[in-house]
Image 1: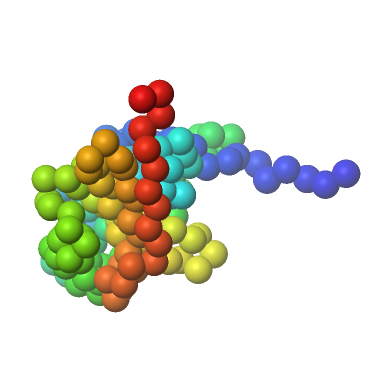
Image 2: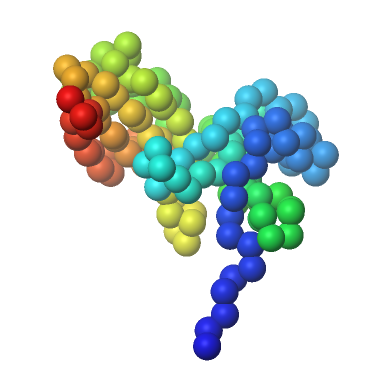
Amino acid sequence: LGYVKAGARGYCPPEEAKQYVLQQNLLKYAENSRVVYTRFSEFGPVDTMVTGYDWEGSSKAIWVSKNDFFDTIEVEGSVLLKDGVPEEKIYSALNEKGIKRKDVTDLYLAINNKELDQVCWYALVQQNQKRYRYLFDFKTGELISEYQYEYPYE
């Protein structure tokens, strides 16, 4: 018999995540918190991303999850936003592909690969009754993957 890792990662409500990073002094000010999909599928799994400013005044993103078994919050990763490309560069890259800003339904940062600690920009686009997912490298802005699918049940 093998063993099961106690406490799979679970959902951490955004307000609880925000409160946690402030209580742990991970951020001096927390501006936003939201759920992000770590495998770039709306069907999970998820982390909760909190953005704000650290004690040096740098803009930072921190991802947390909840360990349901132990009822604890765990930090999954963090980045200084100055270490990567700004979201405007992602909008520019999408524009070069003929995608207008109004067609981008969601754009956020998430950790794509926990083992490699790979942070990526994820863009969800809706255009001409089709949906597209784009994955860009956080540090370089390079396109990593592009996936197109049609709406189900149409």
